[in-house]
Amino acid sequence: MSEGAARPPGEGDEFGFDTRAVRAGFERTPFGEHTEPVFLASSFVHDSAAHAAAKFAGEAPGYIYSRFGNPTVRLFEQRLAALEGAEDCRATASGMSAIMSVLVSLTRAGDHVVCSQGVFGTTIQLFALFARYGIETSYVAIDDPAAWEAAIRPNTKMLFLETPSNPLTGVGDVRALAAIARARGVALVVDNCFCTPALQQPFALGADIVVHSATKYLDGQGRVLGGAVLGSRKYVDELLQPVVRYCGPTLSAFNAWVLAKGLETLSVRMARHSENALAVARWLEARPEVERVYYPWLPSHPQHALARAQQRAGGAVLAFDVKGADEVVRKAAAWRIVDGCRLLSITANLGDVKSTITHPASTTHGRMPIEARREAGIGEGMLRVAVGLEDPADICADLARGLGG
Image 1 (cartoon, rainbow, N blue to C red):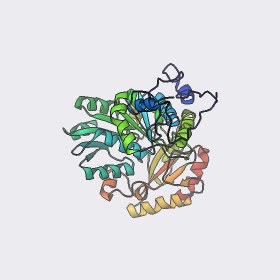
Image 2 (cartoon, one colour):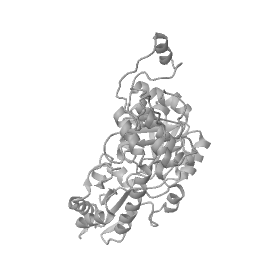
Image 3 (cartoon, rainbow, N blue to C red):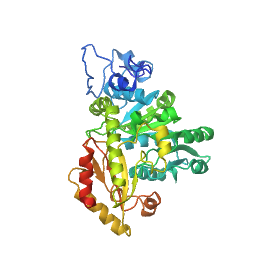
Image 4 (cartoon, helix red, strand yellow):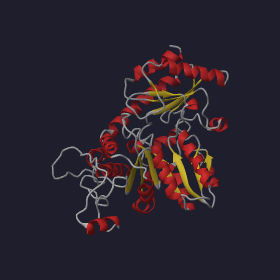
């Protein structure tokens, strides 16, 4: 399908979520294939010199060069846009390149960003990198809309919200922040990585832009890297597309095909991930060695009511603090749990059918200044578990080895 073409049948809102996940964005070639093809082409030919000139000038639809447009990548973009309820989407090579593309598209030297505390460690490092170019970031409590509003300055260009947050699963009030953003004339950007559109729809809650690390649950099996930015057609065409075209944070066609196929099973996987994670969270909460469990679907979670109001389920990711007299003791106890695992994979990645475990203070958030890490609530006794699709009893039994049986 050519760039800018109308959405094909099956992509409209008259079809259910699962139907769109399976069918949206797919238009058969003259060969009549039943599954989506992969276009492993770096460039595309033109009918004539005049046709080439018209395509390069944006006066005729069609593909030119896969750095900024490819049929397989477009399939993934349209399918994800249909699931998120977005007007348009641009795919990128990773989740971090998606966030970077938003920053480049919305800010310039002298601008300011407000971001929720406790976000993914590399996101914090990316914002710190942009400080070199005169773009300052302020961090506020995820659950305090008044603090968000107070942090906005005349030069603020975006509010960046990761909900649920990584790793504490803090939940931000998307509706409240959207109202603040609209009133102050800034964009609300929501990282929907943990929930995916299967569990949370930020655009329906008022968000302006949604970003994804498609590497995680959109793929769902730990196979490829990818990212995505979704928003209005005006934003995508006028602000985002030039960044994608000229900076080249390009998603490969093969990865786009894998991700598009991953979307077909998204709602089924996320429902089971959430069911398993809730079972593990409840089990951990009953363990005497555990100080606290962070999971939005537990009544003990501070934003439990908000999570139930804007999410369909709790998602796959939980965190927990182990008990200990001090940070040294808690770190040793946490590492014993990690080292005791025989089933859970010791890796900082998540979004896989295989459960994973990591110690955020020394891995995903290890490059943060220790003061900032403590302020965000990420202590030495905290572990993050991304609950997979194994039998939850087996996951609990694996964690029990390090917890003391």
